[in-house]
Length: 59
Image 1: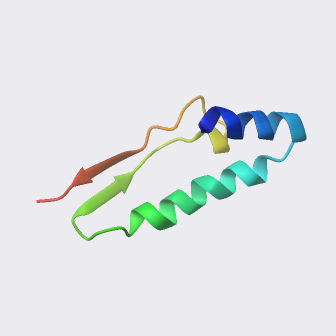
Image 2: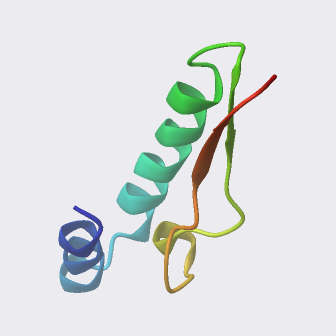
């Protein structure tokens, strides 16, 4: 899916749409469950070469 979004961004010059998906991930996954921690330091939507997200289970 990331490549499709990157293609849209490049083809139509609309970086905001891909950033919107990144922001939505943070909202949805960031509050999915109290024992799940969602984290990442970079995303394709914000100009990096990859999305390095990870979800971990808290003790």
